[in-house]
Length: 309
Image (tube, helix red, strand yellow):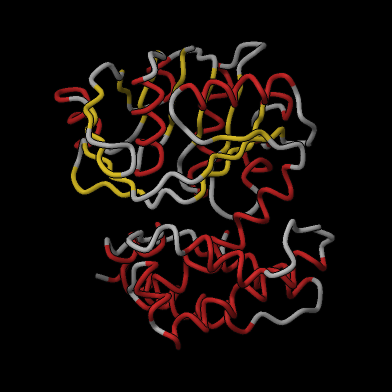
């Protein structure tokens, strides 16, 4: 298959490397010139849970038009870049092209659907990778728990199962789900638990869990998100959300969520679509979310200072 990964940051680079190693024609599309140039010159180095390897058959580009029409488009940018990317992909779509939205937080598919017909869209959720880019041309990931795939409007289709097999053959632990809303919300609970707390306390996942006060705050964020999901009619597959997120976090103790990495690099994070979304939706339903609200205030205050430097 011809596959383009638009946004080859930490997670996008993992996708590109393993799909390329599996023999697909993979295009890595990104606006970070040092990273793209390093891949073009020396290949993409991978370390961590997938072992140590270099994938040197990847194509590179700085915009979707560089790749041209593709069988599969994987949008792995941050939420703030989705609109721009979807607009660029739209004219390149063919009748059977698939667009996979891989963003943290809520509303990933809806953002893509502003510009691309929903019947092209699959939702992807990555769990337990703990990926980072130590240097341009090198991606590291701590784990490899699960890739979840689902149709934007639900249902277990032949298309979703076909794409599931593509990812599985590339070495991913992957599963197609009929209920895309449930899979989004179960990952969302983990995002909410680890993202803002790790950034606020400047801690890896393991360091956050080892600090009783900090972990209490993180689980407070979990409880508020779970309360919100239940109020919205989500039928979670578990009864104990705190145990669920704790078990998940324990699998990636050395990981740093992207929100913490953003703050270490002094750049804006995805706070609005993760912990901030808990606050926004809770207010709409008359619920309170003081843990998430407090962390959002702290991180937004810090991010405002980044732009003043």
